[in-house]
Length: 319
Image 1 (cartoon, rainbow, N blue to C red):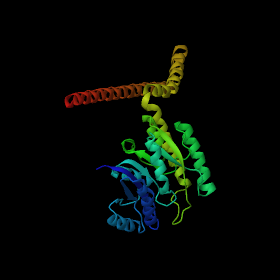
Image 2: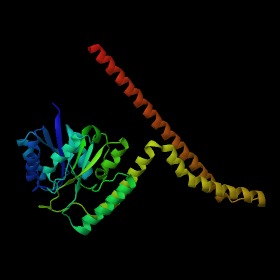
Image 3: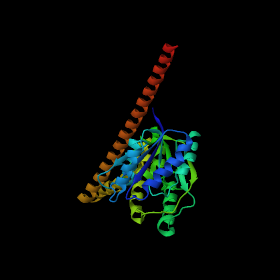
């Protein structure tokens, strides 16, 4: 029997948080009257997190534990938990007790309204101003501007997804914070709600300003993928324009000097040929991307038509 909900929680050195966290999740979800599981993912903790999580999993069949041999990062842990999850709806959250499991009911209510992704917004964030709040506001504004997905708090881990959507999104590096932007290619319904945020009670934060460069690099990747996916020929053609201009200038100068002075610069001529070759390669890559995209659309359409045909035949035969 399929589960209604999976709650995925990455853990790294959260020994003191695991028990109260699991208790809070159970207290927040049990009154909803749905079947659920808690997927704990230990990201190579060096304290007693694994021991405590394993004890909970042995006593509560609704809790399962995924263990990493070493620390791979939050995104890898979240991806492993999502892959392991068996619920139709997947909720992700941090393991440091700063997210409130009591907000899960509101997330699920918004999913029931027809949304595919519901994102938490920590409107009263209990973190340090200069090292956490201000960099987060700048990053969120930049992400919204670049991706076109107006999420106010991409860094909030408390989110709800339809499993059929989130399981199709590849996650690596720091990509967990860009899931709504990555999913926007498929045109999902995205909602954002206010959620509570608590000050850290145990341990210390694993986040810092050192992650900024990773976030910026991943943002560039997201923008490239989102822009190139539907119109590869257009974007590759735009990229080739500067090289085409450089090739025209260098080869034009080579032709002018050869005609007027009966000599030419091999270095300038060679540079022009390189630019021209690069232009042709970019245009060829764009044409290939366009072909792949169109073939993918055609196969998807054919498969959809075949499926509908089989469903119609199956219904007719049943009647």
